[in-house]
Image (cartoon, rainbow, N blue to C red; front, side):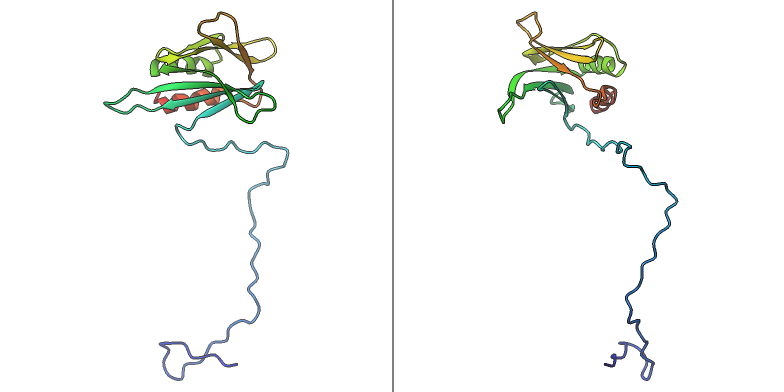
Length: 176
């Protein structure tokens, strides 16, 4: 089989031979060391204003910052508290609280700095109050209904949850 001449080539120009073998890719020599399997993977990138969930003992705390809309509403943060009942596919809502940006900054700065105890109360709205406390064994979030003085639920904060980073990200969402 002969090849056709190249379009635009002068008359009588030689027809180049094309390689019949497939090109062989050279393996790239990487100067970077490979990461062993036992090391934790790099933290995932979080989009700003994406809700953050903290899970423990069947309780889920969902922190969400609502950005300021100039001339419409100020920035605020809501925390929704839900419980996953055993055998149920849908979570049960236990309550929520909504805090102004100023109260949110105070609460989140306390979390980031490792202060204990810290109380989060909904100064704008809410049905529950949260109290962060570092106990002898681990940190916990205590959930209290506003009308009751005793703790209704305990959310034990596991070692896999980095509260300092979480608080810093939420503070950045608030514009602190």
